[in-house]
Amino acid sequence: MPGVLATNLAGLELANPVLLAAGTAGTLDEMADAIDLSRVGGIVTKSITPQPREGNQPWRVVPLESGMLNAVGLANPGLESFVKEYAPRIANLPTRVIGSIAGFSIDDYVQVAAAMNAIDAIPAVELNVSCPNVHKGCEFAADPELLTELIREVRAVLTHTRLFVKLSPIPTGKVTMTDIARAAVDIPNSSPVGPCKRPGADALCIANTTPAMAIDVRTRKPKLGRITGGLSGPAVHPMAVKLVFDVHRNFAKASNTPIIGIGGVLTWEHAAEFILAGATAVEVGTGLFADPKSPLKIAKGLESWVRDQRVANIASLIGAIDTGENQPR
Image 1 (tube, rainbow, N blue to C red):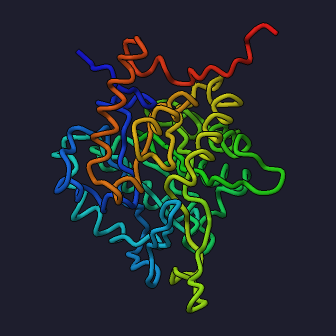
Image 2: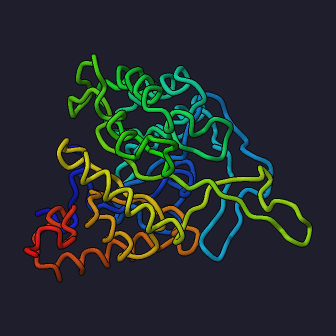
């Protein structure tokens, strides 16, 4: 009998809604040395590009009072190595595996997506269109038309694999996060494809790290080798909660599009905030650096919370925030 944390994420059944975020848990299952992977909902692989990448020059990770600054630069073994060395192990892992895809052109994304679509043990992929740590890493996430074009091409090769799209937290100009979300989901003149029979994204991942930087005032040099990077951790959590809330209320709820909340999930309370704001699942990233066992503690705390809320399953709490807006005045 499914537990109170059993989660349906775009038709993908998870033991609980706690996922290990891309780029923070190794290429695949390296975190198995620290935690029992059967006790998390799933793992998101390191973002894979067509060619291997060494990443940016050091320093690439810097701790801050408010969280963590990183500019790893999409370091990964490349598609060929991933398919030959990592993919054969996926079917034997005790949890779900979501493949993460990155690139610098539409052709890059399509090439990796097609390869992951051929791996039966990968039921979903996360399209990383919002990495602030490489040149043009956020280009697709900032332009609705360009994002729609990318997703149309990627969706066409994902014939039996779910598509999750990881968005940037900072759309620019007059473009809002809801506009970007809608562009990722509503793809005009496209036929429904994949297990969920949708023309665009099956779920939205909100959000990636926030562009930021830090300076050593004694040496007057940037603390990161790439000068700027992405901020994660407690400082970005309230902003990410608002983005999830906005997208769920303005678009995702009506379109039945699940959201994965990402940003500063260090405790079960942080995860619960995302759920109440409208997320179906959450990803833990920076929390793994602070405490590798934090995902297990988060899942345990969520289970107690669901029981305290007197509901049968955590799904009943998705978007269940009480804003008071319907109260009589």
